[in-house]
Length: 304
Image 1 (tube, one colour):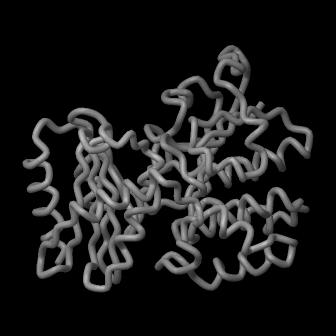
Image 2: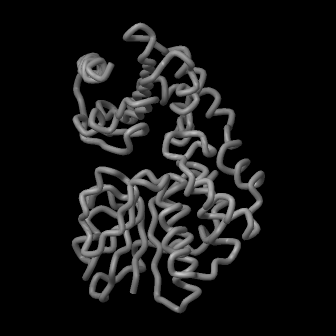
């Protein structure tokens, strides 16, 4: 039996790639459990969400293998510690800092996304893919490349996108699902983020902090902040963008973006996080937000 899972706080790439592989394996007659952490409602457009399994359906006495998708290390896998119960771990990922934690590691940091990596595996093995699988893969690629705009977009990425369109994917439909998902509360989160903007390093660093008090007072949720850091990225002067949120009292989540030759993932690592050279993040417990902000800005300034 295969247990498919992705990382904590999942995104469209992780969920899309996982569900694409899940659909394919089930079609081929394999016994599959797909176990994912609760994700925002806007991801319900992805095919196969109706067949996601509960963790309670997994009997740890069973002989099962885990396929972990889009996880740079075992501590990113959700459900937490499930990998300790597995007979083997298959690690499929595109992060450059992947720790190769699997018994089998299919890791390629050249590809834009785990969805693109899954597609390349299917293509190499001449697998027949139905439209549902293709749509999930395209959504994952589209999300992680920001609509084919980010530095991780290359020739193979564009070729994969074109081939998926040839297989019947409606690019406009998937793009609307991936990017046109702003709610009233999402715009409120954006309003607060813009109100709290600060500039450092001759306007090259764009920083915004949202306190837990602000989040609670306006009844905002984690998903309301999805995509905001990428809006800030569109600032023409800034080359490093930091969005810091206090998700719980003294628990802070940072989203980092960079442009050009500046790699931001090493900074994220220093704060118990990680990611890609131009898109990274972290979650950390800290008692003093001002001290955290000062330390974070100091680490960022070193990059300039």
